[in-house]
Image (tube, rainbow over all chains, first blue to last red; front, side, top):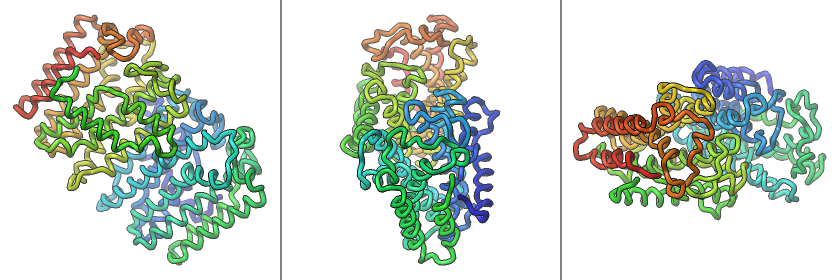
Length: 293
Length: 293
């Protein structure tokens, strides 16, 4: 899915994650190893890259947003570890590798998830670039609200409750607005705040984030039906097996593709006021439509 | 264990928790109900009370520390929910009631724990009394460090790894310094920071917290052997059953009582520079020795 122009940002996020996480030789080693296994083992870094690009689009210096980009990646990794646990989705494969609990056992996986969330907050509180205390405080408020019982965690609960039930499109969108949308929206808003975006820029980034989040989820559902499991790095067909409500299931494959395209167009239109500065975000949004993992 | 003088603080913490937590009628209701089940269902509020008393001892106005006191109680509740899960200690009873996962199922209990941690951070970030932004930022840094992979979560991992192994006294103390000690120490330091304590006061509170945390753990081990399960609100003898290393097991019951007393004396001596202002903390420390739950 990713463009060569984004490689630099991705690499900086990976270096940042390495430096903000406790080393594998720190006590307790097994816990720190498990944390690194899930965070450092690949991933698109979509959320972190969005934060950096949003900072730049708002007129800021993107390295200032690196701690925030790494924090959101840690929190994303925590949510995946907990989602994969036997009492949740009970998945064996993630990013082409065994899930955390398949390698380290359930207890360590649970605690590695807890510790990654904590480490994400710690990074936001203790690694603030000079002079950006106020902006990081606002960005932290965004991040925490998006991760909360009324954001991401709430979406996960609604998703669990919906298994085996028939949902309409509005209900499905409401689940995803929380489960994946809230964190993607926060990624954009955090970058915008750290880049000191004015209200017009913040509104553009917010609309962009909301539309992109929805398009991302629709393509996620489509990949579960259509992708090559080798490239995707996880088993496909799991939504069908679990009788999960998905966009293709509710509206058909063709209409789901059309919906994703419509959301991407909406996302890109929202960035019009940013002109040249929104270029990389627009390119990334367009790449979401053709992603294969 | 608690003194009548502390009843007011306890009640204010309980009112605060009620107001800082999303209502049970907020979507998703089941999640918010599960969060409230564990937070609002009793407990000594030791950590929260320590934060309020430390703020007062440092010369601050204690209601200013109420959001911090509630945050630490939410984080304590999250740690208990996760500790009780089947993949961890697999406990059925907590504070005289079925554990969270026995009532709401494992998936919701896991997510309720996650959401309580998030809500604790949210309270620290979004409910700051006017003019205390800097102090709350410092207090949040303390809280997050104490909850991290090198604090409370790390202690939990070391504790799990030690099950069935023989430990010496030094190793046991190291586990408890992290598992329960770090958060108790942070409770004191958060209150001290919010009360704008000078370095001498901060040092007194820190030593008090470290000694109290250790004494609290020793009496916890003793209660597991000696208490009435009805009064304690959980099953006793569970350490023995799990072959856990405990103070009474390592040094004998009599010596464990003596050790606890020694730590409480050390805690109280540390507060000497605070004179009258440390009175309630001293009274609380002395009550730990005679607690029955």
